[in-house]
Length: 80
Image (tube, rainbow, N blue to C red; front, side, top):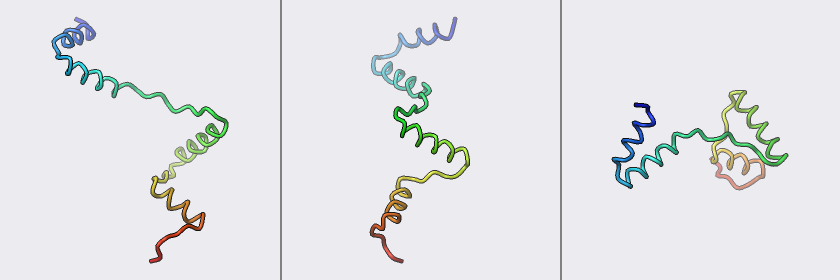
């Protein structure tokens, strides 16, 4: 019996709720396509990001990015 036939046999024994869970699980296993930028600016920014990742430099978290923007723009910050 092939794996496909085996899965189909198990599938038929499952309740509709269990079948929904199996579908959700299978969808989570499916590889996601790599991001493809659509605009020239998006392509340029994606290339920059890829170079940074390849260099091994850590990417900023959302909080770190917001902090850097505040500092660069002269925004309010607490003084130690």
